[in-house]
Amino acid sequence: MSTALKAIIGANVVMFLATTFFPALLPELGLQPARVLHDLRVYQLVTYMFIHAGLLHILFNMLALWMFGTELERMWGTRFFLKFYFITGIGAGALTVLLTLLPFGPLRQLGVSNIVGASGAIYGLLLAYAMYFPDRRIYMYLVFPIPARVFVLIMGAIALYLSLSDSGGVANATHLCGLLVAYVYLKGLRLTLNPWAEVKYRYIKWRINRVRKKFDVYSGGKNDEWNRRVH
Image 1 (tube, helix red, strand yellow):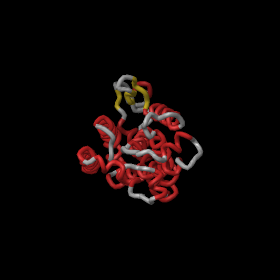
Image 2 (cartoon, rainbow, N blue to C red; image 1 turned 90 degrees about the vertical axis):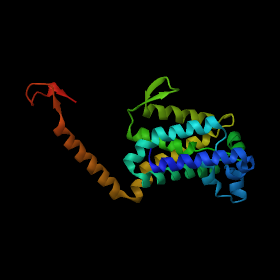
Image 3 (spheres, rainbow, N blue to C red; image 1 turned 30 degrees about the horizontal axis):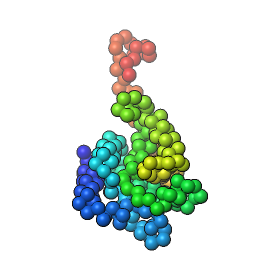
Image 4 (tube, helix red, strand yellow; image 1 turned 45 degrees about the vertical axis):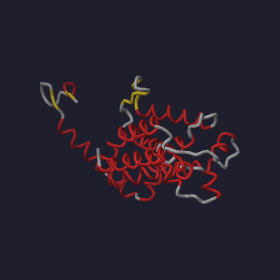
C-alpha cells in the first residue's frame, strides 16, 4: 500500500474515531447543502469525504479505495492520483449541492440532509478503473463475476434510480455525481487542459504495443506459423 493510500485511509480512521467520541462534529463536518448555500460553509465540501456514519460504512469504503486505488495510483503516479481523488470527491459534493436546487422531492429533501462518506470519490475511482481496465472481473456482492465496465453501468443505473426515489438515507445522488465528475475530468477536462499529455500517452501506448509483439512465445514450429503462437 502506497504512502498516499495510507494517509487517506489513516485520515478517515482518525476522523471516524473523532466523530464517534464527539458526535457533535457530525453536523459541522458533514455536507449539508442548505448550509453550504446559505451559510457559505464551503469547507464541508472537503470534510464530508472523511466522515462516515458507521463501522460498515467506513470499512467498505476503505476496502473499495484500496481495491481500485492501488493500481490506479501505480499507473498514474501519486500526484495525479491525489488530484483525481480530491477533484472527484469535492466535485461530487458541489454537484450534489447544485442538484438540491432542482424541483424534485427527493433532491430537495437531500438539501437538508447530512451527507457523509468518501463514496463520491470512490465512485470516481471505480469509473476510472473501468475505463482503464474494462474487462477486469469484479465480483458483485462477492458472488457474481462481471466485467468492470458492466459493473459501473449497473452501479450508475442503481444510483440514478435511487437518487430519484426514496434512497433510504443514502446519498445516492452523490454517488452518481462522483461518476459524472470523473467521466468529465478524464474524457474532457484533462484533454482540454493538457492535450500534449494525451498525445504522449497515446504515443507511449503505441510504442508499448509494438514492443510487445517482439516478445511473442511460440509453442513450436516456425515463427511464420501464426496459428501456433501462444499469447
